Image 1 (cartoon, helix red, strand yellow):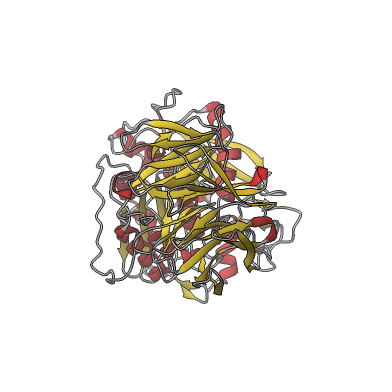
Image 2 (cartoon, rainbow, N blue to C red):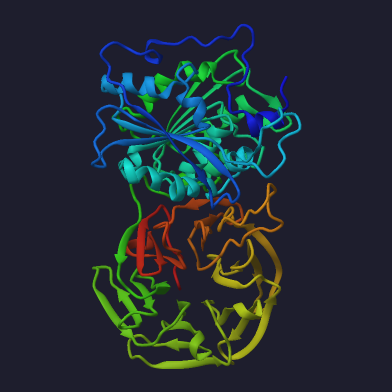
Amino acid sequence: MRSLFHLSLFALLPSLPFAAEAFKATPDHLPQPGVPTGRLIAMPALQSKIFAGTTRDWWVYVPAGYKPDGSAALMVFQDGRNYHNPTGNFRVPIVFENLIARGEMPVTVAVMVNPGNDPTRPPNPAKKAGTTFSNRGLEYDSLGDRYVRMLLEEILPEVEKQFPVSKDPAMRAISGSSSGGIAAFTAAWERPDQFGKVHSTVGSFVNLRGGDAYPALVRKTERKPLRVYLEDVSGDLDNNFGNWPIANKQMHAALRYMGYDTHLEWAEGYSHGSVHGGSVFPDALRWLWRKETPKPEIVTKGDLGGDMTLHRLLIEGEGWQPVVENIGFGDALATDDAGNFYFCDMRGAAPGIYRIALDGTKTKLSDEVVSGMKFGPDGRAYACQGAKKRVVAIDLKTGAVEVIVTEVQPNDLVVTRTGHLYFTHTAKKEVAHVNLATKALRAAAGGIANPNGITLSPDQGTLAVSEHRGGSVWTFRVNADGSLDAGAPTMAMRRPIDPKGEFKSQQPPPYLPAASGDGMTTDEQGRYYVTTALGIQVFDPTGRLCGVLAKTSRERSEVSCVLSGPGRNYLYVGAGTAIYRRKVQATGVALK
């Protein structure tokens, strides 16, 4: 039996089948009379910058009937040599030709890419002489967006120079087997704006490099617009990295739970390889490219009564909608009890505080520029003004401004019904407390990695603070005198993976990137919402992650959030030059 090291890093050829296994070509795998043939083009070897020091072979198949008008579909294959082999188990050019001729899939350009290799590094000693070091395990099994960036920034631009294809993600698929299968899923998971279809055979959703986390990530991430085909067999691998058959069933169950358009093709017997996956490959393509758009099926019969799942927060069909666009920088989102929405445009042509009434009317209320802002029990807007080094209270009816404290660098704040104000002193890594009756200022809590967002539980007995440079949301007990105690990092925010392509070796880096926790808010049920680098992360009152809401845009970072609008049932987020909202199954906490 081959070593798993050989399998993970160097399995560019199908696994050797058991004696009882033999690939049987279907008519779709064989050239058929009268079916037009396309061209298979060997492209110049790619010298990658993203995976520095590696080079890779790759091929482009252009079907008959291709038109250079950008209408053709695209399908990318990992371990490309396996897929274009005319006597292999997949035979992409032949299968494509037959299905395209019958209208069972669109005219599709196939891009088949081998993993990178580094000829300057020594190969696996078990390999035969003359081979080179393969980068396959790092590229395919690692989570994060570095591999898909290589495809999007280095491979596909070269394709587009000669063969323009559709930019519609629903017309772009990605495929792979074993570690190539998880690579295909990771590429689409990270960039659903680029790939809308996934084809995985005997996918390695196990702990080779953290892929076993996917079922849990899927269940706690807002559904992405993906169609996912999985294939596995009962005799697949079971070793110290995980159990492949169970992992694929877990993936399928998680995808079904979240309402994905997904299919698991299962067979008893067989071993880790492409005998079964290759034989059903034509059917997989028919399923992936079918024109049907099924309605998501959400099955929650297994949910526990107290679990605040995303299904109990999100509303099917309700996505992010723009509220305000083309502003300088929207921050300091706030609400009043009626549901009127407030924000500050900090850098626009007319900076200041604005209100959007329930009827949609937008009104500028003040020229003051603020970062954090909340309404107090007296009806005034309490706000942070870092540029002026002060915290103020603004009467938005008269414009009157009262200075609460000076010589501070506040970021965000909250005000209690009993007259206590807390703000995040980010540079000092502390939370400050102000007694509004006496304006006495004191440090209330410290040791937080750049505290940023801040909010209160519905009963105001708990204060929550997000870390911008760390990975936790801290909670504190609020005492009658305004002091804080029982501080603990009770909520673990999900962090980005390899956010800037910083993995420089074959091992994960010795650090964890920051979650970039920012603005926070709370709902009546006690959920905490925090804007982060990955989207809006939502936690239940006990600190467990309910899930992550999709970002409004890949290019934007959300910095502030609040529940406002009619019934305070809309989640608003500030995202740079725009503000968005979506209706949810939650209600913002009343101020009084």
